[in-house]
Image (cartoon, rainbow, N blue to C red):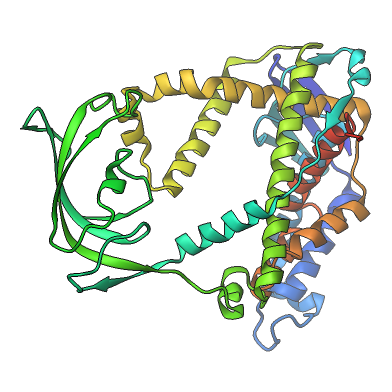
Length: 435
């Protein structure tokens, strides 16, 4: 492969890449081999190896050659980035197929800025913290599972009283100085006591209430309440309880645990699994903290220019992640921004920009460090990591899909490799604490 590089400006690199006829011929063979085992041809069973002459008659040379060229262009793009040590901001653009014989293409790639890290980085030595899991943390995790899978059964007994974690259907109205307070009325609202959804102190006031009971009690909104319209207000609520549903917690049987994790385990083994999961989460969080600590140190001895479009793209990316996380909690970003009395741009500037900048700086620095240290991950390390990922799943259909995703040169496989390279780099700056 022959590569000619030209810097069009500080952010765009032009690559003219020429592939050899020999490698194009290899891609043609690969295309035929793929069709031989994956194509559906009348008279042949699925997955049977179909003779080459029949494949050519069925799909024609033009289609096979197109597959070979497409695969070649993809390979030329990836390998040219690797050889030129280019970290693209986004997928490069194929500007032109200059020639088909030999296959020659022109690619424009938006690249990251130049980064200079002082050699003092080699002297950075940080302490690695040890993570542990207490029995109370395992207990709390089990309680959270209980809460999530708790069912509610309605009771019609007039003597039944509300307890914490029961669900009450209530109608309520808030009053300030004897007048109705706007936006505090609710009709037939289902409320799980202990969920702390409403103003602090409200749920505690209706514990021990009965069906049909009318209550009246004072509740003061905190001065730092998230909705400024209510912050600090002294309020009286009138509440009617129309329905009580008693909480029925699940039992940790082997069948229930199998539904949760796909493994038939007794409670003791499930606790061990929960402990391992908590430990994995803590280790992951610790690695993020270590990365942040390392980046802070490296920023002191690094020179780089952050381009405006790069930062804007990163801000948008972080904002979308926040938005998706809120969506998982059934919170709409527009409603949240309205409660803060902020526009999207104001929120990005005040709450997203700093995080996005730190993340972008970290990515640039780690990429440069990888180049300086020539850090690589061996195939044997990759195999071990993939096995570790697969070991967490039991369902055959899930395992099959994952095995197809985590194969060399696929997007998922190469992203995993990059994460492992960065992990290895970060770990090299930390030493375990000694007693």
